[in-house]
Length: 212
Image 1 (cartoon, one colour):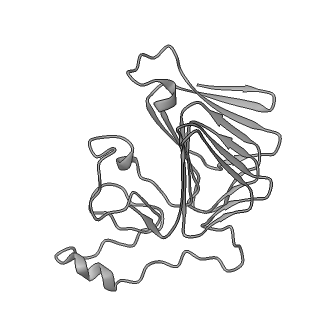
Image 2 (cartoon, helix red, strand yellow; image 1 turned 180 degrees about the vertical axis):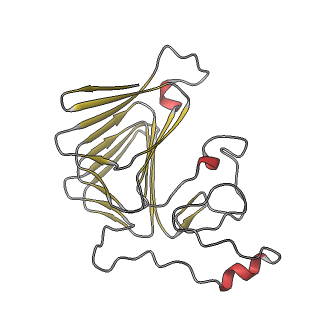
């Protein structure tokens, strides 16, 4: 369910793992996106363990200039680039400009180690399931080592440093809850702002084309 009250939009999530694909993943300055668990739904997990995944599109940088708030785990995924000049506050936060597929989140493969295949990628040609937005056409798999000789797609925009990357601006802030984690993934990760983990929390910032 979605409730809009002035500058505040509240998403009420009714499943333990929610995935929402946005046509434009943008939170304007002065606006608030709050993500809440539907307390009427029975679950063995408490609200801090629920996962809410929000994916932008490859055609634009996803801008978080306002506030994103949640008691649970929030993934903000902008494969075209992710820029945070506002604030993100949740028990656990994942900021990524690398795509995560449904297969990693729901279904029989969810939460399982993927062996030699990455969890986050814009370009990888996976051996099963859906493809990320810039995946190559499938190649012959009789010898996986053949993949090493295949050029990866160009995912650099020399005219826009935020394109395809994760950037936390000078006014940007990202905060986790107690014992929570903040994970930031992208081909390039730049932080000019504030990243704050609470009470033995963990921070992981990793730059690369594929994150395992």
